[in-house]
Length: 177
Image (cartoon, rainbow, N blue to C red; front, side):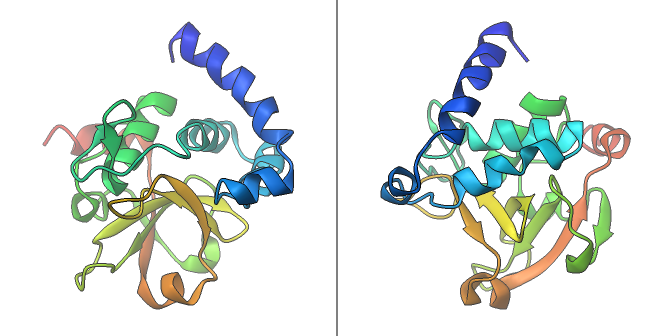
């Protein structure tokens, strides 16, 4: 992580923690401050992933997008976060990501795990990063922005496809294939 990015994230985290509930609701991210308060209980790797991902809340959706400057789609967000926070190379698409790492049960989810959904009438068509407390961060659809949502919403419950725990050594090998 570059020094500038580290400084930016260190300044951003206290700002996000101090955001009032009213301000968070105005930004359509009312879950952000609650999730941020639990960051300290995550593992170092998961903390790094969560901080990096939450720094992207509000970045606009762009199909095929893979950078915050130009926009992100769901797999572009996940790929960018894993690369920036832990130097882990993931495949480009959600379907390809669904084959990486270890398959885990929903009840065993931990912060930093990948969560997959069927949003386009095909399995593994959408991916996000699990944050804990049944919440995940993702880049949902055109016209929207990166945001945090609850997996308890009926929409996400009905479309949940599975979850994967990414193992660093396995991802770096598989992404070179």
